[in-house]
Image 1 (tube, rainbow, N blue to C red):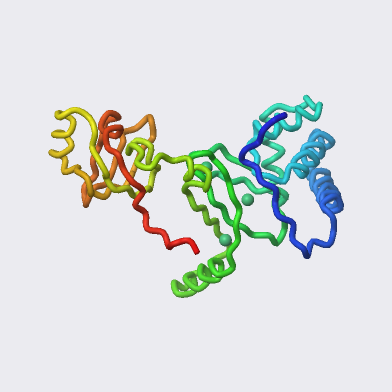
Image 2 (tube, rainbow, N blue to C red):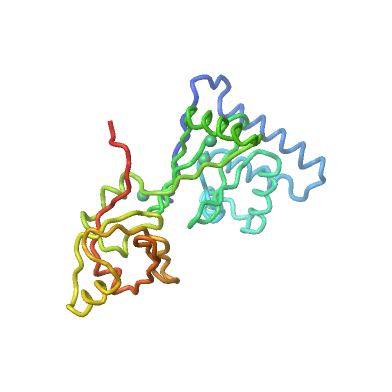
Length: 251
Ligand SMILES: [Zn+2]
Ligand SMILES: [Zn+2]
Ligand SMILES: [Zn+2]
């Protein structure tokens, strides 16, 4: 069994009167006509990919889609051909490509007339779809205030999903905090020398920090007051923190 942790079944709208199979057949026919009109090569292969893709109904990366198709016994494709075909689907409005930060690009089925936005967990990669009419309306109002005429938008909210939040230690080391996260120093552990180094940088319990960068390749940067501080790994491991973003209380 292949596991696809990123995926989630899309909720079906009660108003959806035609079945998914009928809808897929309509899209297949439309795509065939487009392919024929542009004299595309390997039309049956591309239609087969569309069939497989439409059965997935998830956010899927190219390698995962290839694996999914191959698991069904079809080994005719490589990543280049698959990528080219998926890009054709996007250009024709059958698929949408999402390039979320810190993640490989994913494709999802584009349902005509259906708009949704995304929550992205920066810890486990979970993608969650949402739609909020108040938020949609507010965006239109704000655009109107700026005399801007919006045509489309993408709302991507990065953070931690429920599971990842629950798995967190109570006072994790700063090193584990996510980019954009605001944390408060609870304790500084380590040698006396380390403590003195931190104190000289103005770091002590109670201080608020915002994580600017924690990519393993680059420097660990936090903002404290109005300054940006570069920390080495030992320092980031010695600072125990508590999450300090302000969120409205859950009802
Ligand atoms: Zn939206
Ligand atoms: Zn998560
Ligand atoms: Zn989506």
